[in-house]
Structures are given as C-alpha cells and as structure tokens.
Length: 347
Ligand SMILES: NC(=O)c1ccc[n+]([C@@H]2O[C@H](COP(=O)([O-])OP(=O)(O)OC[C@H]3O[C@@H](n4cnc5c(N)ncnc54)[C@H](O)[C@@H]3O)[C@@H](O)[C@H]2O)c1
Ligand SMILES: [Zn+2]
Image (cartoon, rainbow, N blue to C red; front, side, top):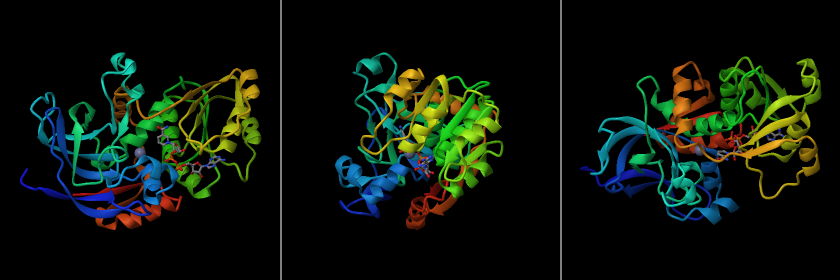
C-alpha cells in the first residue's frame, strides 16, 4: 500500500451526526485481508449511531468508523491467508467471533457470546479501506453486482429468519415492511410459501413491498383488519409461521393472535426495552418462538448467494444510490422512513 490515509465516515464526537474524516489505512495482521470498499449500505444501526441515542451512546466508543454492510475487492492479504486472492471481489460477515467459546468450538460461530461488530465495536466499513479477518470474507460470484453485495448483511438477516422454519406450502405472516421484512417476504415466496402476508402501518413501505415482490398480500393494519384478510384468504385456522420484523409490540400481539395452534415465530425485530407479552396466550396456543441474531456463519451466506443465483430478486429494495460525498442526503432519506435500502458509492 502506498497510500497511508483514507476517507472514512466516523462518529468523531459523542453527539448527533457523522463526519467525513481522514483516517489511517488499517494495518492488517497475518490472518486478515485489506478490502478496498466499493459500495456500502446504510443500516438502521447506523441511524441509531448517527442519532447518538441511548443505545449508541452506551455501546459505541468514540472515535469509531461506522458501517458494516459492504462490498469491495481484496487488495492486500496477511501471510497466513489461503484460499483467497488479490483482486477477489467480496462482501463479508461483519460479526467478528472468537474460537474459544463452547458454541464456536461446536461450530455454531453465530452463537459466540464474544461477538463484536464492525462499525459498532470495531472500526467499520464506511471507509475506502476495511481490515477484516480472512475467515469473515465472502467471495462474490461474477453474477452478483457490488450493490447487491453491499446489502447481503441485511438480506442475510432476512434469510436467517425466513429459513428458521420450513416454509414450503405454509401460510406466512411477516410484520414490518422495512427493508428486511420486504426481503424476507421475497425469500418466503422463493422458499415456496403458499400465502405471504406482510403488514405495516406505513403506506409508503407497503407500496415499496408491492413493487419489490408483486405477489405479496400487503396489509396496512391501520386501515384493514388482519382477521378479514385471514378469512378472505380462506385460512381457517390462521398462519403457520410468523416472521416478526418490526420490533413493535402491537405487531407481535397481532401475530400471536393470527397464528394457528402450534404456530412458529422467528423474531428478528428488536423491541425497545422491555415489552409486556401475553405469555398464557403463547402457552395455550403452544407457540414456538425463536430469537434470531445476525446470520448463520456461513450457511446463511451460502444459501442467500445460491438463491440469488437461482432467481431470488431483491434489487428493487435499493431505492437510493449516492456518491459518499452526499452521505448526509443518504442518511436523511433513511431517516424519512420511506426509503428502502440506501447504497453509498466509494469508488
Ligand atoms: N436481530 C438482529 O440481528 C437484527 C439485525 C438487523 C435488524 N434487526 C431489527 O429488525 C427489524 C427490521 O429491520 P429494518 O431495518 O427492516 O427496520 P425498519 O425500522 O426499517 O422497519 C420496521 C418496519 O416496521 C413497521 N412497523 C411499526 N409498527 C408496526 C406494526 N404495529 N405493525 C406492522 N409494522 C409495523 C415500521 O413502519 C417499519 O416500516 C428492526 O426492529 C431492527 O432493529 C435485528
Ligand atoms: Zn445492518
């Protein structure tokens, strides 16, 4: 590397905002690679960090280069790295794990209690260069463009959640039509669900969902009663599987009511603080609830790339593209609550 400094988008002061800074190009260790970043996606997490809310202030040390959704190309490799090559296009898993915990040693890398996130606990991907353990690199096939590579992290959340339970021939309810809920709906369709119903309270988000996955039944729960939809679809007992992707208590309550006896819920949405839950309803309906965190390393990555190569199309969930110099506009679009994914170009 001849270049010593790089542009990066960082939380440099403990207050609202992010700032474009000059930062040192990271030095890699023997098991790491250096990635020249091409595209990055803005995540809800980045909005929390921008806003410097209670969670961000308690979690993120300053200064911190933010961002964890990326695609780029390998430009330098540590001496122990095998199986990768310079010039390889890649995305990568932003959860950094250790190898000592019981879960890691059992091969359940995504359950390592010592997980640290790039752009949250470690310097992140909103930069010209990113240092990443070679273990975390996911090579991109030629038929997956950089901008899709830059949203594989949230697509992976959607895939991990959607594939938690068998969806073939099942009736699926998804609550929350944010970018991840919309992508989960596309995955549920691809995975052979019979009916896929997606709810939200934001008409713009539901319109986007219909644009991305035309075969969905979208429901604005401020205007339509979910029970009427259940009857209209002829689901005599309700939905078989629920994917909770809103983080909203009302949506979870609605989901519990709308499920069949013995129904299953995969829960990705993060409710703020503690929320009351009608446990007896869950017990008497014999409902299984699975919490979902991140992506399975690396089965989720394998499956999502395979599905993308076999007709899964989430490209229309990207609604805005900006040069990174216009990052403030990109963040404003995300904060509006109307956008899908916003992708920044670093080339
Ligand atoms: N567990 C994890 O590893 C993980 C990773 C990423 C994101 N998340 C969480 O997953 C969720 C989805 O992420 P996202 O980026 O798509 O979020 P988002 O905030 O863009 O989308 C959430 C959607 O839920 C909708 N909503 C609010 N109240 C609702 C209700 N009563 N019924 C139906 N919909 C309602 C909102 O209008 C919004 O469109 C968020 O809660 C996020 O924090 C979890
Ligand atoms: Zn993310």
